[in-house]
Image (cartoon, rainbow, N blue to C red; front, side, top):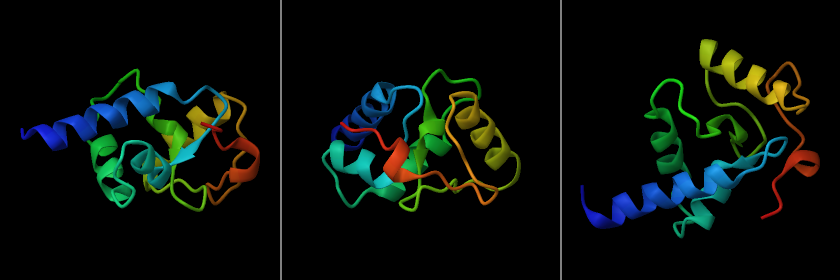
Length: 104
C-alpha cells in the first residue's frame, strides 16, 4: 500500500472511532475531517471492506441526506444498530441530521 492511501484510511478509522453513541455523521464529513473533502466515496469503500463483527462504529456514518445507503440486510443491520443507540430513523432509513449530527 502506498503511504497517502494508508494514512487516509487510518485517519478515517480514527474519526469514526471518535463518533459518540447516539450521534451520526456523513461520509463527506468524515472525508473532510480526514483531509480529503472530495473523498466521500472512498470513505464508503473503506467501510464496505470492514471485517464482520468489527468494533468500529461504522453504522454511525450516513449519506449526505442522513440516509442509509446500504441495501437489504445491510440496511436492516445499520438501522437496528442506530435504533439500539436511541437514534430515530424513518421507514426510508433517514435520520434527522439536525438532531443527531456529531458536533466535532
